[in-house]
Image (cartoon, rainbow, N blue to C red; front, side, top):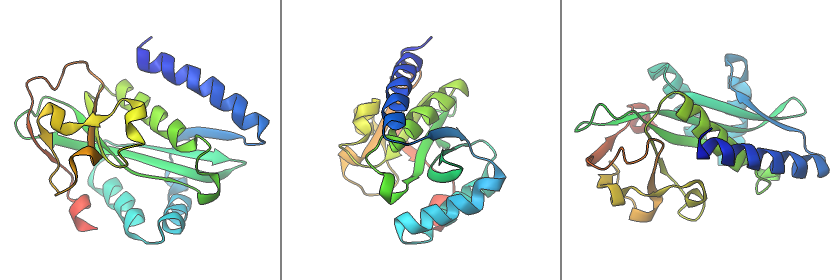
Length: 192
């Protein structure tokens, strides 16, 4: 059992105990096509825009090689996360994903649902033999999962963003030692 799996299992037990005592019955599972409309509605409501929902749709159209999970409470989707492929032109042998987008129902934020989605998504990426995951996100949130600024690996974002918000997590230890370059995203990210 990997360290990531051990951490995930321990945190899952703690989370389940906490959620149960609070009256939450949260279940993280793989997204199905039947979930797409509910995921889109949740995403539009939380982000107050259609752009992230459009991104989900375009990613589903542009690749079959993605990880998409939902968090469900009493049969309702209250969270969603998606990981899709990215790559480095200089190292096509390194299998990489990006974490984007992620959404949790506004009324249920700060209850560990986002963390459960991230951990389950990282575990799913690990099971698919993904070597590294990048994220463009909150500098104070993602480091708790092991993400560090991608610049430490000589990896950069294709967009002008502050160094601390473009982060990377190695799922295969030391895979990025000889890597460098700009991460290349699917066209969907430019189309929204």
